Image (tube, one colour):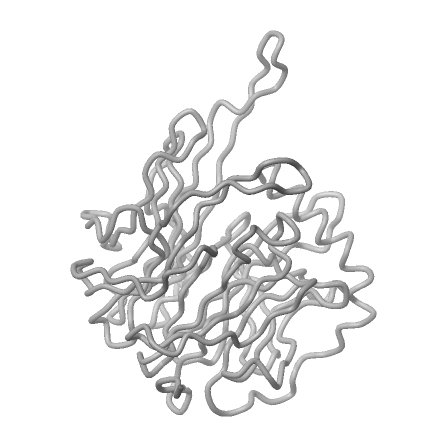
Length: 356
């Protein structure tokens, strides 16, 4: 496991001892109607939660830190199965001496927690709508010792892998290449294409961020948008929601000047044409998710000033109609990290448009 991820995993496991005393158990029955899942990390809870479309009726699906459950890794979005019966997430093993990441699935009521074999050190899981494939990312990193510089990173890459859920066979979809980071974000409704984010880096600095669509046999890729990431197909497959990179700003913080790049929620046709920004803020907006009706989106918004912590404390879960109207703050905590609000799919889960 790369050093940065290992260090964060260790922090989560150290915190989980306290969290195990206060989180409580999972829901015994999945409630009906529109539901959001999200990661929440604060002084009392670290876990994967479910809530209604207004952020109320929160229920713990996974987390708590005891050995029967992994600690959810909050920097990797959860992903629902196409029928809305189970959700995949990245979890940290309970072994503090050698923490590792794996992909887990849990049922919509919090029961049936299961680790998926073949996903060791996997993160950013995405389940295909047909229930046959799991896409996820893995990172490879190499260090070397240099005179007067000590140990330095000489190779770093993130590649995408596919797990056949029927056979258990795992295969690599994209190659290892120094400076190339690729993350899966959404399957097309017919499960034939995978939308991904690609971050090409040179000399450890981002140079080009793009949204692409890949065929699952690796034979072809299509650039959907440049200076964009996190492309997600709409339920009917005719549109994409994605993150469009905005302006870069520098502000004063406790640690000195900090530079952040604002992002905006945007939509486009499924081929990437006609990209239109729905939001126009100075904040950082992340990980859009379509509700099953295709009429509204949920996403995470970090404070415009970078927040009170580099971890993003003070985040908000937002919703907005697909036409850009009725932007609404659903949930926020001044001292909590919120990440990756994701709609639960399935019949009867449609939230419809926001009224304003």
